[in-house]
Image (tube, rainbow, N blue to C red; front, side, top):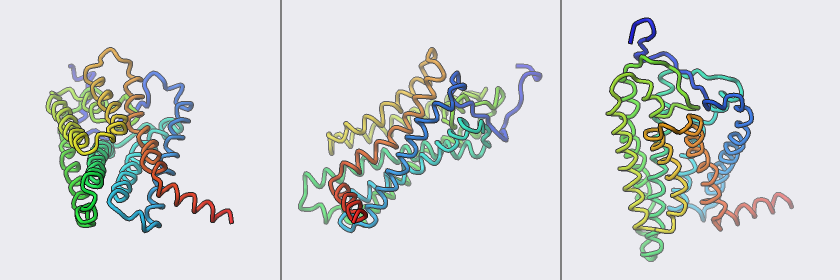
Length: 292
C-alpha cells in the first residue's frame, strides 16, 4: 500500500458512521420505527422501575432482577439510539475515537449483563418452584446483592479486552464505519493489521458467556428459553453473518444488528412487566384512582 493512498489512523480523532449503507435515502422513513421502538422501550422500562419502587409487595428478588433488566435496557438504548437518530435526522455522522470505544464497550458489556440477569431470574424461579419453603431464606437481600454484583463485575471485566484490542490496532484504510453505531467487528474490520486476536476473543466471549448462561437457564427453568431465544438468535445471527456472510448485503447486516438491540428493549417490559399480575394490578389501581 503506497503512502499516497493511505493515512496512518493510529488512534484517529474521529470516525464517520454511515448509517445503513445502501439505504441512506430512506433514513428518515427508517427512523420512524426506530423512534417508536425507542419511545416504547423508555416508557415501558421507566414504568417498571416506578411501579416496583412504589409498591412494597414487589420488593422481592424477582422484581429486583427485573429492575436490573430495565436499567440495563435503558443504558443500552441511551448508548445507541440517540446517535442513530441523529444520523437519520441531522446527518450527524461523526463520533470521536474515545466515544466510539466507550460505545462499543457499553453495548457489549450491557448486552452481556442482560444475559447474566436472565440467569439470575431463572435461578429465582428455580428456587421458588423447586424449593419454595426456602425461597425467602435462600434469596435474601444480601444474596440478591451478591448475585447482582457478580453479574455486573463478571461481564464488565470479560468485555474489557474488546475496546483495548481495538485501541491497539493500527488503522490505515479508512475512518468510515458502515454502521449506525460502533459495533465491535465493524470497527475491527477497518484495521490493516492482523485482527485474529479480536476475532477469536469476540467469538469465544459470545459462545463462552452465552453458552454457559443458556445451559444454566435450561437446567433451572426451561420455560424461560422461549423468551431468551428472541434475544440470542438475532445477536448470534448478526455476529456470524458479519464473519462468514460475505455475500450478504451490508444494509442487511446493519438492520439485523439494530433489530438485535432494539426489539428486546421493547419486548422486555411487555414480557416481564405487563404480563406480571402484580404490576398489572398496580397499574390498574393507579389509573382507577386518577379517574376518580
